[in-house]
Length: 383
Picture 1 (spheres, rainbow, N blue to C red):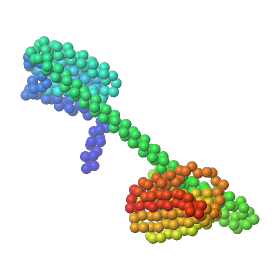
Picture 2 (cartoon, rainbow, N blue to C red):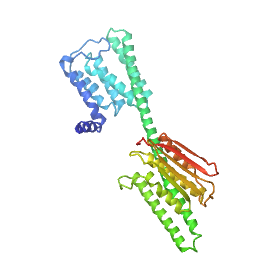
Picture 3 (cartoon, rainbow, N blue to C red):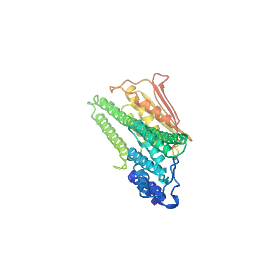
Picture 4 (cartoon, rainbow, N blue to C red):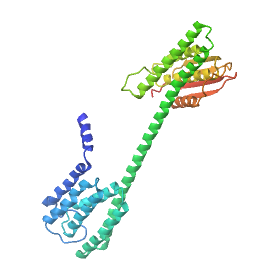
């Protein structure tokens, strides 16, 4: 199986002239076999002649020129057309004459510039050939017109193949650009979740420490909380960088619902009164649901520290059979912290994450003046 896969790959790496040469050699070989003489394309009614050196030259010109059909399609078409003219005017009618439709098809499919000029030149060259064949033979004009229309149809098929190939290339380019954009958005979202949460907690803890200079023990605990938060920020950033560069290191495992108590404890150290409860046991396989649930709690607690500092906050996590339900709310008793205003990216990113998994996300004012975030996250997807 491995050898069979390697051979086509090795063949595709060869130059196009090398890959196109075998078909030309086949036409040449058939043209040289006596049994196939005068069994090729016959345009007009020129009397047949025996195979000679001129016929061999025409056969070489018609068949071997196909090796250039993708690299230099115009050169290929010109050489094949010249050989075809010698073939028909000499009355050889060789199998190599079959190369002309292939040359026309390749010109229509692979010629990028001066396409109209090439089509006009081919038409201009065909007219005197048709007149000469009509003078020497007795065939009606309809035969030459039909042959020309067939060549025009073949050119049209080549042009359609070229347009299809160009459209596919544009589609792949567009998909690649959309993938890069989506990846940039995902990275920005992860950085927002990690940096905003930890930095907000550090700012709040540092602000609180300014008022504890008269209580060394409490000040020491506050500064230790800032230090611990900074370490967690570095660890989370290192984990994110490991995901972006898997070859650099294995990294820690992704955050999950099992680490939500760490978020709660961090918020408590920053001065937030947080009531946490968890119902049920996590399912054996929850896929991306655990990470999304963790991010929902992380973003909600970050907003609580920003806009409801010191207020009572509740975190409820419930594990169902096939979903995780998260609810984080504040009671409106807190105050706004001295932190930079948010960009709105966090809640929008959460709504998108939950939506991708087929869940529901709501962020709205609470009944008592606070704020409430609810998320229902299906846990059956392993994406």
